[in-house]
Length: 478
Image (cartoon, rainbow, N blue to C red):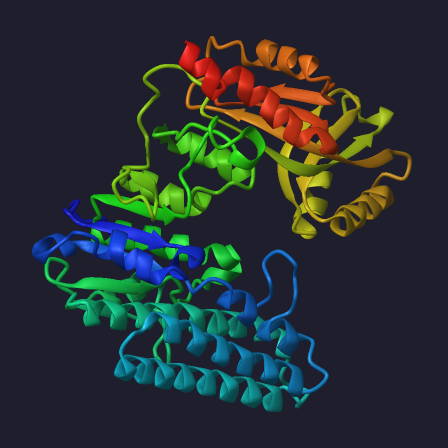
């Protein structure tokens, strides 16, 4: 990828939950107190309004089927068609609340009707085509997933542009979703074509978080695609800084666990810490997106969208000024343990386990091994872990396999050297009456992991945070 000279503009991403508070965004980060030239040299990459992608695909947490899931398992057309009707109604209801001018609401209604009708025609035609034995529906489902997902992103970007134009901003709709595009493009070509003729100094591009391309973003990143689009735009346009706007600050722990008054905004960290957070399911940014920015030398800032005066947390590649613990977080896992006495001195056991885990698309959070035991800590549903267990039992019939529901609590920082995190952490857990099942410290000194019973995860986070970062009371005393 060609990397231009660094410009003066920023590329900024807004998530779906924040997008649902469009008026507040307009009055804070999109316009706020800015006037004239200060409004521009900013590219905004937007997600669909909160909940819309769940209706189009499936609910991210509960798994409740949306249009895609119903179409994939359809016995008839009625279920997915009704779901698509609900999407249309919900989209119109959302922009009806956001757009204050009747002409803008009419334009948005028409936009939604056209896109939904086009998607419906595609699904009907595909069903008809795949009723013939020469064509297989399963070969087209990823394309359908991308088509449906792009509807939500295009809708939110279009509506945001209408809202901003009504407020006097020269906003421009940049649609990377490939709607009715007969040509095939790589991601770089798609972005370059989308930004052709855009004057960043006089226009505010509002860009769809989904980009249709030959690489197939959803195939690699599923619903993390918007951050990959965002980081590629930053690199291709030579942004001075990349900014992700969230509904909260990147803080030292979950305030619900340790208390709002006790958390500390991180303020400054590096990409190593961002990677550890991703591993623990607390993505500041998708690791592949972070890699692109890191290689291009573009710093990333994570801010609270609704506190525009706060600079948030800057993530770059600089080493830490002083060693410190920055964040304590926990993740529920299954510990899959394989014990085999014949393992001693024999190669290949670990490779076989990794092959099975890869085949079942199971994510590894951490792993440990000794002479005759390999333990993988897995972020996966129990049914997937059981399938892995069955496959490994066939490969190693004499091995003993077990899966336990535990939690990994990780203490993370750019530099933990000389802080005694291991000894102080063990003392904190002992004082709280928590006996760790296992622990691990890497030579890189960026994290220490304490494996604890699942039902003591929150207690462990609080105990470690109180000791290693401190409470509001202890910090004030110090």
